[in-house]
Image (cartoon, rainbow, N blue to C red; front, side):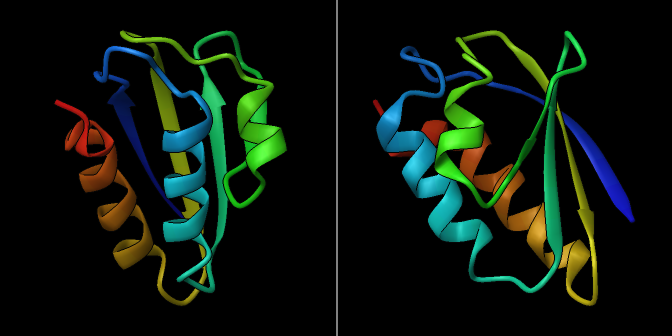
Length: 89
């Protein structure tokens, strides 16, 4: 298992479009993925519904946890997606 803390930086936070992009990218990998919020709530990183229940806004700190055969690649790709602000200006 590998984990990384990251901050949501896009203006609108983790709304529908970023959540869908995140889930699409996560599902490219075989590893299990968990997303944990600052409050300790945990979501399946491959479930859009789960992610949306976290209510992540700009500035939220989250921990991504990947576990599986391609965990490093999975974590790196998702961290890059978040750091790119999901392509938002």
